[in-house]
Length: 416
Ligand SMILES: *Cc1c(COP(=O)(O)O)cnc(C)c1O
Image 1 (cartoon, protein in one colour):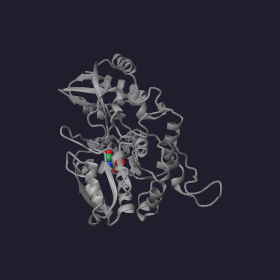
Image 2 (cartoon, rainbow, N blue to C red; image 1 turned 180 degrees about the vertical axis):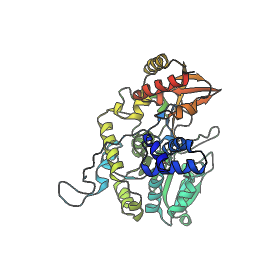
Image 3 (cartoon, rainbow, N blue to C red; image 1 turned 120 degrees about the vertical axis):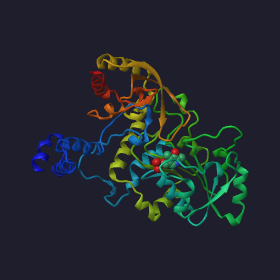
């Protein structure tokens, strides 16, 4: 067994895993399969992959691509350097994010689901939260609004109907002492649309009740004006709620994800009125949901890039804003050097449970047949899609620095 394990040491796996691979191959009566067993163990590890699916925020690929550059040094995570006293981990990145969306204050938790859970627990425990029946949604991955509500200890108070809800419907519930409404909550219909005979109240029309208005916008667009983009917001963002405008229109708090349109690491941001953010921060759940220094460091870096309007340093915006001319030129270079494939027009999608009806024109490489397995087992795994027995690699979701890896993979696919 040990000899067999050593014979596959070039796979780079640590010795205990080589032994596992060898043992499993011997148990299967096929020692020759040890290398395949080792490769299967490697594939089971978290690793860099190339996203050629055209889905920019691919849930299975970790949504927004985001790098973290941190050395092993100590950090002033909970230390105030001006006083030398204990500080708050919520003092760094959250302050910058608050500034970016025009909020009085902000805090960061592990994801948007925890942000919503914390808001409900801190501001509405054992009390009613008014939500439109059109917003009792499942966002995916088990985030179901009624379930989150129940877990938080708040009571769901349904308002209006599935397709039509008006401000007066909320008013009626707020005026009813039995309902004991502590919050009005609006949840963005991130991953579906209701069309036809529909009516949903604007944020403005819900802002003047005497209970706080909380908006779960999910998608994480900071500012609808996209001041970080020289050309302003792209047309496909037109209907997407943004944190800054939602707050300016009267929401007391917004909650959104860090790894959707924000383009950062997995995180949930709560931004808005300071007293409400502080109440969230004081709740015991805040301790359980707090992010670590890696995430807060990555978010701080991201917030500074937004402030510097350095959109090209944010991988999501770099992908989203690439011109079709530049994608076309890259596709030509890859196909010429790779020796296989035809260049086609494609439609990329934002993905990540945001903007369900939006498509972004893009450029792809089409190869006859289903080559997904060969691409997936390339040195850096490449994820592509298949339509009508044609493999399509969409370049909008591929970073330019991965073009060479795709070229090499195409050479192997094309080889007889
Ligand atoms: C995506 C989304 C969530 C869940 O966000 P996570 O960061 O994945 O927890 C919640 N609400 C809305 C509206 C969303 O779009």
